[in-house]
Length: 317
Image (tube, rainbow, N blue to C red; front, top):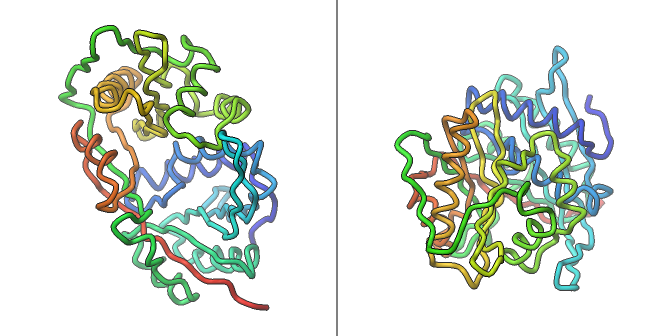
């Protein structure tokens, strides 16, 4: 039986270990928000504000974590522009090791018990045929809104780190690391790219405290006026020699100047020097969201897996 508690930093490290083991054998089965880097990013930036709304379940076999569930329950979210957003539905991030696929039914039961009486969503891998059948058997169907032209389904892209182009920045721009730029500049770079955002200085401190964070792999592009025009964090999975970009963003005033392309190439060179042989990055996959996908395809990434957004409407009882 699983344990019931709120997600802790130690839990996230266990979840990352499972992500590494699944990545080593069936990377196409790693679910949305269950990758090595995504786990660190989501926990780091959000736990101080949202951690009280994050229950989890853990399943072990032979002393190893083989399945986990992390529910994001309804809550009020504060944004950087001073507004608030009420989240009325629940979302589940989860992972099951393919050797223990049958545990998905226990994960589903856990979610049903934890998020009862609200709308519930989940995004399993499209490659996990067994899990998709089990979710359907429990009343979950494809979310039609997420599959439209401007839908919210995501794809995971990858490329190897051979034959890398050299990055080229416009005159007067330069690469910096977060260690060089400092916390205030790193936070502002993210807010400028993603406004309105839930990100805060406290959230960035949480990111820095995750076991996977490296300031030398947090890369920014500085404009001639000192603005941090682009930024990305790279998460290095040493076991699989894989680096994951999350997040990637550019200030609206500096887009379409090749900064994102140059930053990704520069980051891949740094990642290769750190021991990585493969890079990954996620993006929205729907036709109505071509910008990020075009950027990543332009530097050699290609889709290798995607998710299937599922939904179950509110039930009484």
